[in-house]
Image (tube, rainbow, N blue to C red; front, side, top):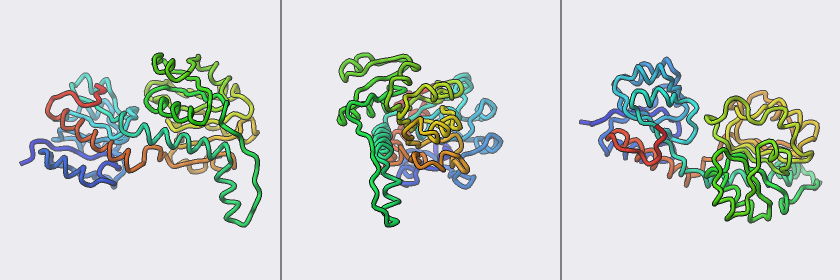
Length: 319
């Protein structure tokens, strides 16, 4: 008989690696499959689904205070990923429910896509690819990365990975972070700046801030207007951090050279004016979706979940 019951909320956990579900079962868990068609659970659905459940492997399920308080056996919330904005951390802490995430799993994957988006925007790769397939043979001018200032908003694991990759292209590096790692910055020639100063100085602005640490829109219309003419904007963090209407206007007017976007306010961004612009390269929030990263994420999620169920400290505790 299984020792614990674990609900799978995350639509991606076990998708690429079904053996991760088997590993939970072999460790003494009754694995309860996602019962809402693979999407995230809504608040009202979780009020029922979490009854008699000891743990949840979550993606973007609505783990509100009401849900957490009503869960009769819940011991642990294992986030399959890093974004915590859908989890009421205060309610979890008050009830003694452990919360964990997987920050060490996909930072290389996200950093890789950040540079891919930057190169694609700088050299107009998507538009020229489409034109070439259609029989065209025009080659518009691009811009080099060497000696351009890359401004990194959020110098955590992902931001650091981006910085190390950008050094290989000869870029100059600056960053904003509320908790600056000065030793890393000194070692790699990164200048810390206040956010507004960084935005005004950067030739490329790359967003890696955590949404749960920011109130409201971080890159608003004022800050977009303060960016250098001809600058490039990259977002592989969260769409909610950006004023998309202001960004679209800055791109439409050619104040900005272009943007590479892996995150949007609404996903999918149906009807977004950003999708109508030829200086935007858009991807479907796929930065962390490499087989390598997803395998690591699943392994860490399993260990976090089992440790939480046993009353031990997870590998990456949040609460």
